[in-house]
Image (cartoon, rainbow, N blue to C red; front, side, top):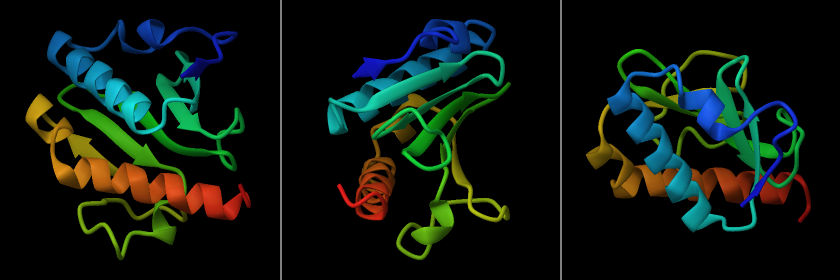
Length: 130
């Protein structure tokens, strides 16, 4: 994983989160790294979130983000509307973004979470002609 740390680190993103939510965020980060070892990570502590993709540009090159919340971790997808029919667990009503509320470590291990990440990676790779 290539982490772009000019805005901060992933640790900075999760340090204000409740301990159990922080563990979920770290597990999601590990899963993304496992599925896409050469991905680009852009932590943005001010949001707080970290984006993952094929480059630094959040809304074009990134396919996913992790954002800690009070009771869960948000695993979001910048272009989720492009593949929401394939992934019924996606939530949201925004123009492009969709997300999954990850409430525990067991959810991180689910085949559904892995599937959505892989579908999002494929969608961005195709969109960027990579």
